[in-house]
Amino acid sequence: MNKREERAHKFKLLFSTLFYEGEEERERISHYSFEKEEDDSTICFETLPEEEKAYLEGEVLKVLEQVDELDRMINKETEGWTTKRMSKTDLTVLRLSLYELLHQKEIPEKVVLNEAVEIAKKYGGADSGSFVNGVLARILPKLSATDSLEEGERKEKETTHSAEDAAKRKKNGRKNPSFHIVLNKKD
Image (cartoon, rainbow, N blue to C red; front, side, top):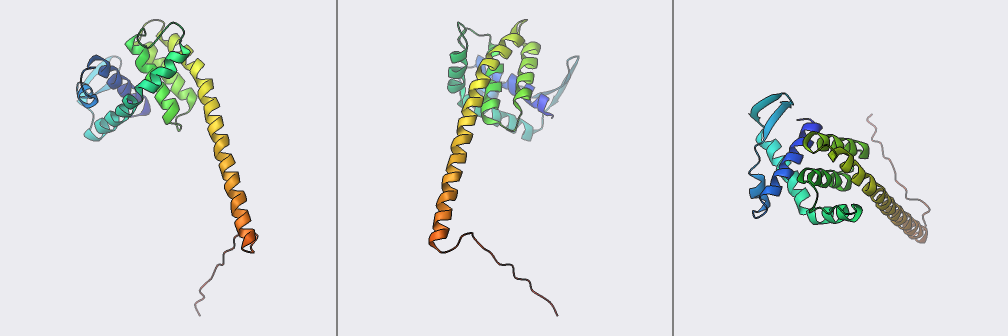
């Protein structure tokens, strides 16, 4: 399964959980049929291997754990469109892509945005792609600012620790840590 297929399954799995709100997360996930998609014109009834199912379920459960926080972030940036008023498709795309932006830093932001818009266009209404793009465009600069602050704090801590280490070395009479290499010579 490639990344695009993985994201599509995550989207559909997360989307399916919106319809069984009275049940526990695992029960809601159990309603999804993990069938592979060949392409838009072909229907395939081959199911995914168990390890891929388990992986996808685990990923969606992580998103579900964060839903309240994700919804707060979305509601903060959408004027007049709370998550309760949004289409389930658009809401699901926003939750999934926002989760990826926050917790899966190895995925480039441009890829997350592009994939979110493509999924919204494919499964949503006529304006879904534009709507999802607009909401994520409002949220992304704030996420980048938060990342910059966290990076600055991390560098500050590293600098502080380095200065403390240098002071300890100086107190012990060493300027720099040293090490010795011992070679064993065979005669």
